[in-house]
Amino acid sequence: MKIFQKGFNYSQDGQGNRLVYHLQGCNMRCPWCANPEGMPVDGVIMSDAEWLLESVCPHQAVTGTSVDRNVCKGCKGRVCITEHKTKGLYLSYEEMSAEEVHKEVQANALLFYDGGGVTFTGGEATVQFDELREVLKALESCKIHRAIETNGTHPRLSDLFPYIDQLIMDCKSCDPQEHERWTGVSNERILANIRRAARQHPNLHVRVPLIGGVNDSGKDREELLAFFREIRGENVTFEVLAYHGYGIKKWGQCGWDYKMTEKAYVDEEILKGFRRAIKEIGARYRGT
Ligand code: SF4
Image 1: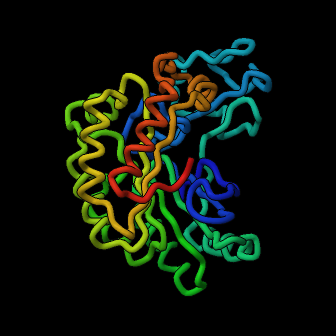
Image 2: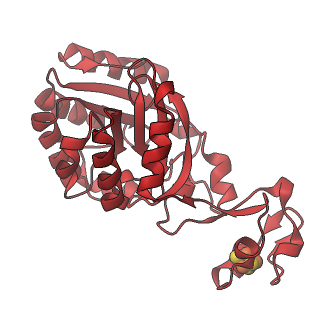
């Protein structure tokens, strides 16, 4: 499995204390992404200006604290990461076999207090579908709580339902054109998968990242509420997350421009009102 980040967090991506694996590769291109290095399936060379060494590049792409990514585009050998191991230039992910992940999770089992366990997220966790299914299945016998966080686009997502204790799904917009405009992907299958999960999965958590100028208009919120009214149930909880700019630095480290502006920060009253409205339709709200 290609993993670009891993570590513990408490109650952010599932219940209790969790070991969270971020799997490399995503089929969406959301410009607000907090983990942009997780997007390319084959990873990306990241840079850290403080540790850059000109000597690692024979093509003079590295000058002082900057990297000329136009030079990198045509580079085949990538000796900066194949022959050199530095903190200045490094590949975004590390490889682990499903078996190694399984063993690592088991070895950390004592730390899964408060009903915690393991969470697979991304990128998009289901981009590495076969490996993900293998490790989820393997963890079944050890009775470790398993969660995945997904954008909901995979056509065979429901095949994973039997191996997931907690299913966290993003729901960004009910407007198909707007969804595609912002993420590069239609929301058709996502909404169908969320509907299916609400019918079939015992523990579904639906999360909305609310982003100014993207999905925070009155129309956007009304459409989302209508959808939530339809899928609400004892097995479904909802949460609204506010836009933040935590990923800005990483966009730069990948050599990409960050295109979101200050307008993306959501008005506090809109945020609170939307959270309240979800509770008022009789849906179960969980989170801030
Ligand atoms: S990818 Fe190639 S051109 Fe870019 S820094 Fe590495 S060695 Fe140099």
